Length: 324
Ligand code: DGY
Image (cartoon, rainbow, N blue to C red):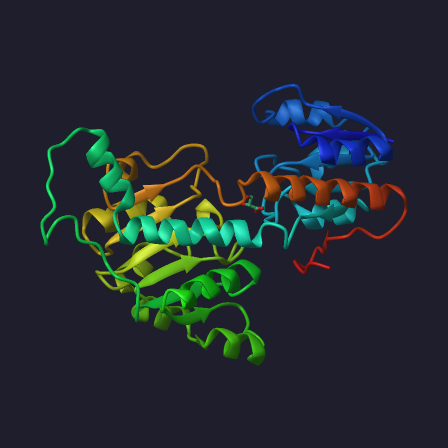
């Protein structure tokens, strides 16, 4: 069995993959181009891919009819044309669960950084600008008693809510469906329409997947509805936010600031955002801990091994969008 890995993965995952077949790993320290990807997957029974790889019907056809599984090393799978692969009998898997806490930690870190001006303060010191303590110096916004609006109360949204509760925040949420009553009551979370959430929240944190419905969910109109004092946090996928509209809205002071880990055209970032002191940016680090990235790669490898062994995948993504 030929297993193609599009970018280096931790050794723990390699051990599992080597037991399952003959492994080829891209030697490039960068994403493969679409042509390189189609070339690399030729003859593959399994492909382990990253969120920057677009895997569609053409890639599956380039691999050949023996392709059985595409294992994305990410929970999000907007880079994969799941229906096209299902049509060709290819199983698609993702890595839910193992990155929940790491991603919520980073989202909450961005929330603290932007509301308490941590990035700005650090830049001030590093620029050797003279300063002295005074009561009005670099004041931020407190969190206690404020409202966190969570868009998408899935596993990561719930983990974010738990952190916010510990900081004394009130939780409201919106999403495709209502959370179970026990989830709502554990988080004291109130379900609101998306519009109502935008109107109410002091911080809006995005945790919905990228789908045709959520692309540019935060656009000029949505920003216009948010409070002028509100902050936006995005750790899901860049295209959920219209980045140009966000830069316009921040310049017009429609909202107070943003904490962003993901971008519309990664690795590029709308240049105006990089000039703003009230914007904190990190380079897609949500799941970036040694432990979490190892678990993600291991889970992807286990998915490959299970499918190649003729067993059901551990985490299959269904063409209708549901996860097993
Ligand atoms: C995911 O798994 O979808 C994350 O974006 C990777 O950190």
